[in-house]
Image 1 (cartoon, rainbow, N blue to C red):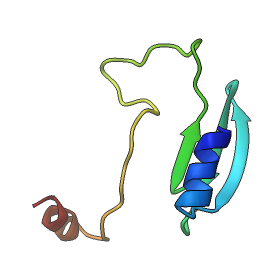
Image 2 (image 1 turned 90 degrees about the vertical axis):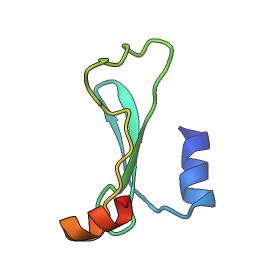
Image 3 (image 1 turned 120 degrees about the vertical axis):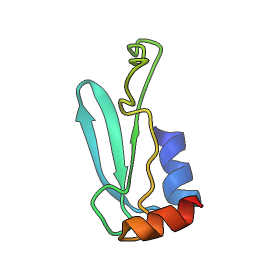
Length: 76
């Protein structure tokens, strides 16, 4: 978590919104204007395997524009 925070906060400049120890896993939330534009979760060797049919928390999402047209334009 320390190395990840140093990268996202120190290198990319994402301010830390909050830190949370939830479900037995530490999390850090970074903000670019919304509460948590980016969240990282500490995982270890004892982490349960990901559900092969779900996205779980192991995903990245980006908000593009404010309309479907803007999203489609970005995709294209």
